[in-house]
Amino acid sequence: MNTESGAMKSGRDAANHAQKTVDDVRDGVKRMSDDVRDSARGFTKNVTDAAYEKYDDVRQAGSQMIDQVKSAGQEKTKMLERQVRNDPMKAVLLSAGVGLLLGMLIKR
Image (cartoon, rainbow, N blue to C red):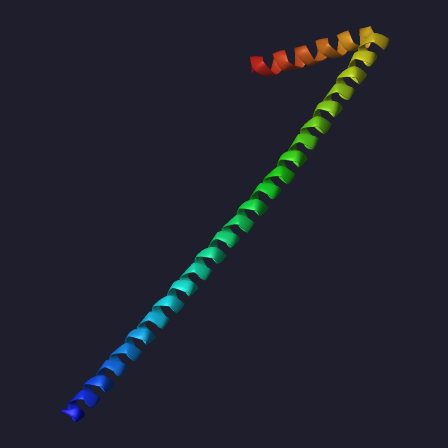
């Protein structure tokens, strides 16, 4: 019986060792899973932050372009107003000529 008891003890030791190995592997997989999850979260945050930063850059550039176009349009309008005030007859004749030309094109 002593031999059986030694075999049983060896079997239990082997089972305990196997269970410890399974537990160690399970813990290792969980740690790796947690690391991957944390890395994915960090990557997602970095990508999101970069996207928001680019969005802000594009929005600011677009706003500046709109301001420049408005400013240029206002300058051209003021210049045209000055030219009409300085030489009203020329402006009237030019407008009449454009109107006549458009009328002829539409009539065809």
